[in-house]
Length: 226
Image (cartoon, rainbow, N blue to C red; front, side, top):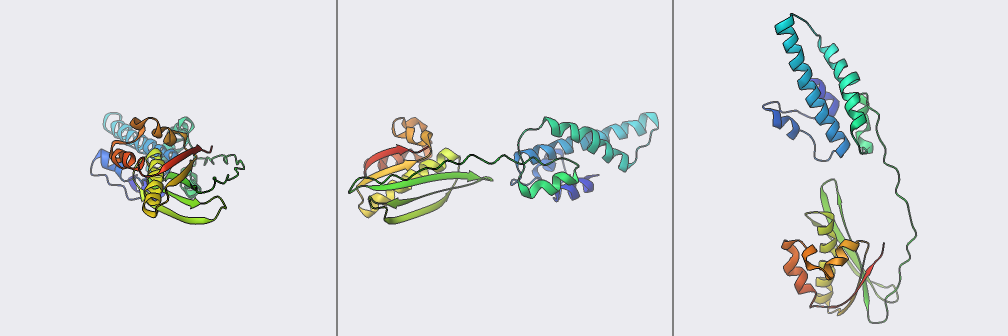
């Protein structure tokens, strides 16, 4: 039965002990697929245990096909209704093999946001940070009052979305200082990250030294663009 679950999820399950089974799951799965896989393992173990008790104490017999049908039609289908979230497009085939309906996330709303030029002698740094599938990165670009491009940057980072947003600002300030750009206008879509300029306790401890040093390097104007 473990081979059956491996074929549905396209993974190699390590059955050496209970916890290593869950460690066999891919970290790139959506939360919904991960929870479905967790439920499948628990239902599979429960079915094996009940079948073993039936054979031992009631002289009953259950085929592998019957056990799999019970897991799919009764147990896993019921669990799937209680699990929230959405799946990635690449996971739809796996869910269909488990006789489960994929859930497609609704498209996000789109709003037109106009870029506002800074005043003369100021450079604007548009920064952003993001975390996707456990991988975080940040970046930004510099433009002057004529919208001329002065440079850009991008870097992989570790941590949360807030960590990535703050790192984007830190890199903008460090790069501006290194280039001798003393008047910097930072624009971000993260209100939480911008609040760190007023409340330093928001900044993760591993970034606080760099954050404090940056505040003394350039003259700043801060804009939250949501």
